[in-house]
Length: 390
Image 1: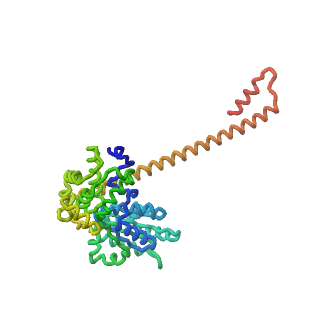
Image 2: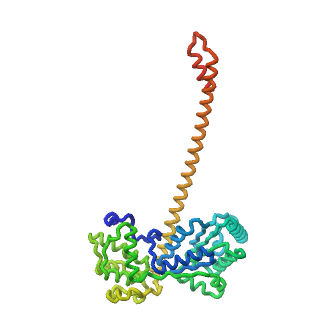
Image 3: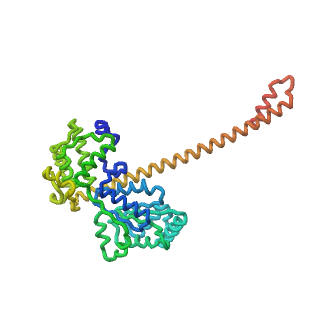
């Protein structure tokens, strides 16, 4: 709606986790470094946690696009499943047959697959998103998969991704063996005040116009105070700010416009269970500017409505990506079939033409050795045509 007005090539504050917009804050850089190291060194288990909207999915997609393109990859996002269903989803994502297979057969197939990949020099990677929803039984099943190893190397690299509650799940006594196998773990912290400002300008720059809106320092202070530096919440506010500025025909964002927008969104009610859990829009801007290096962090206490909203957003993101991938895959398959049919028919036509040319050459040679009756000069030609298509 407003993209042409601001000269954007796309919306800069979409909620879909697009790696093209990734902003590497201090904590995000550290997380990517840890993940890269864990995969390179085949560390077994890697744990990545972070609040809802902190950028976990974006980092995973960045990791897949830049570091896992050549790897054999399985990614599980539906974690509300039993241990056997989880195993079936893992095998299915590795393109192994699962229909009619019991748990023993699934494990045997997976083991054979991993051994075969190891013999070829492959490094299979399993990413489990939303791992906080896994039961203790399912997590124990995943731990057992890590037993598939050679004398000096893991056959399967496993990355667990989830919300902070995942750490509480892993703290259960029956999962102590799994905890001990997690060699690398990192937690995504929200952006600080300065990073919040850089993040907003970064996304507008990637969309095509860094100076689409000009923010006053107080405006940034209030945005940070209201979102506590959580990227998804920053996106929500700024998308509405772009719309509000577009409606009013302005490019300057001051304290008043941000307060009005946050008021329209009812941020205190819908996004934080307790207003004291994060600075409010009444925070003193000067105090906020002075505290940028040590900006307050959210305590993670979201109200029920915010959780529902974020869960719906997560489902929407997954469904959108899944449907797009399915559509593109179907299109590619149809194009390949059309290409195959075209080439087949072209080959048949070429062979038919070559056959006709051969017949024509043979008939021409025959005609040169014979003569048509003198009273019927066209008979030779007629005979030639009849014999050609006989």
